[in-house]
Amino acid sequence: MKPFVPTRVYFEEIVKEYAQGKELLDKYEKMNIPIIPIKAHHRIEELRKRPNKEFTKMKKYLILGTRKTVRLTPNDKSADFIVPFTSSGCTALCLYCYLVCHFNTNSYLRIFMNRDEMIEKVKKTIKKVGEHKVYELGCNSDMVLENTITGNLKWAIEEFGKLENATATFATKFDAVDDLLDAKHNGHTQMRISINPKEIINKVEFGTSSLKERLTAANKMFEAGYKIGLNIAPIILEKDFEIIYENMFKEVSNYLLPKLKSQLFIEVIFMTYGSANFYINGESMPKAINLLDKSKMRPKGPGKYTYRNEYRRPAEKIIKGYIEKYLPDATISYIV
Ligand code: SF4
Image (cartoon, rainbow, N blue to C red; front, side, top):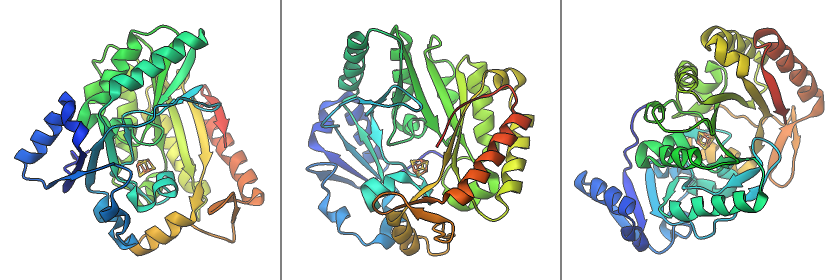
């Protein structure tokens, strides 16, 4: 993947009090990138007022600040706890991105400097809970992407490597894992590589790594001793989805290392699409396909849509069948 070079950097003054913050500001200043002071990363008035059509332009900005509240949230899917970590937002432009439902056009990448505070919270929770638990890093961002700018994922992996009773987990759509291969993970981190058929990646997941690149990253991480999962997400019921998903499973089966496949765990997530996605995509990427198909979808909470049961149930059966056929040794962790 190409390194991310922001076209603008916004920063909170406090960022200068952190070594990492100073380094990043120096680096971007030397590159002659405009650097703009802000009061708070979540209240940048100038960006809040921009029209939807500027969304793709704003995704090229980088915001530096600190995370004000660090509260771990219990979870019952990919982890036991979600850890609000060192970033939120992302540089990519997946048409269904859940972050757009939370942050609208302001779902650009924000990086937070107070990583020590976050890991301290994790350590306190581990002590309090007293038994082995899984901690999800970066639920509101992609830590592999962030790591290319900060090295924070490698740092966190090594921190978890020193902890007892804790496994770190993260999901990614990016292949930039080389920096993580020699991290001292001590078997305490798992990676879930998020995949979709190449036809979907090409027309829906703009700015992410290709399927081949993601599978190569999974193989490399497995050889470096990490436990690997597949996050098949989101399943999109486009025309001929049976064919394109079957081809994807064939490719996955052929490409992943045999030993990796025997330890594989799989998460399957059907698409939820937001009306925020619909309006923002329509104005900022008018040539992109429209994923809101009301003939197949029903409302799921305010401003969100999901597939109706008559479409979803048979699709679920088909996907399960492909997993049994092409990845027979894998375990399905959950389907939602
Ligand atoms: S990679 Fe993840 S966070 Fe980034 S745009 Fe895509 S869905 Fe959103």
